[in-house]
Length: 109
Length: 116
Image 1 (cartoon, chains in turn yellow, purple):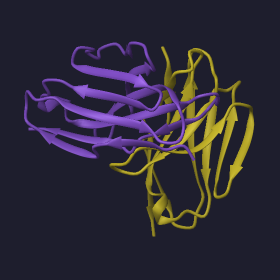
Image 2 (spheres, chains in turn red, yellow; image 1 turned 180 degrees about the horizontal axis):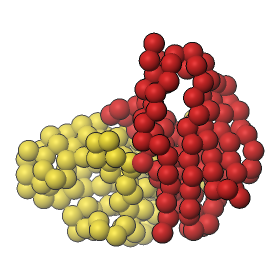
Image 3 (spheres, each protein chain N blue to C red; image 1 turned 135 degrees about the vertical axis):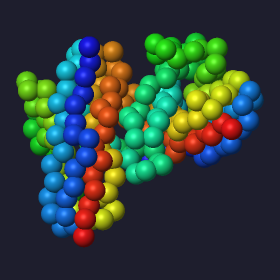
């Protein structure tokens, strides 16, 4: 079966750095996405990785290791508005998106 | 950037009635539209995938006669929840795949459906 694992919840302090991990086992791989979702809202696109390595975009970076079936999202200089759920999704061999359950990130002052 | 407009944002309906949710791609052509359902504190669950001009492909366990999907044009897809029941209360979200791009998925703003 296809499976994406990420922690259910994480807590971090404003101004700090947090890393959200995602491991996956899917039938094929055609890219990995990270989305941010605030409560009651639709997800918004954060990053896309298809090759191994680190993609940096402002305060957010995403890393991928295809051989390990592993990715992480790194958030720097945390702000209160970063409190949200972070969803990891993998596009499989059929180009379907397989979603993780999301990681709820709580930022404390 | 690509925008998908989803309406209504929220709707309350009585049990047994039908509700139609619309998703429009405003500045691009969406050959494929994905419809998701999300219950509180749970992840997105894909309900169906629709391609313009053809029948939708439903995920296992999703009743195609209850959740009617129409994708009549490259800019409009609709989901109709027929004979709604309280257990259908959920957050419904559409997502469009952009033509010619390998990773462009844009989400609508979602519809909060409450069946009373």
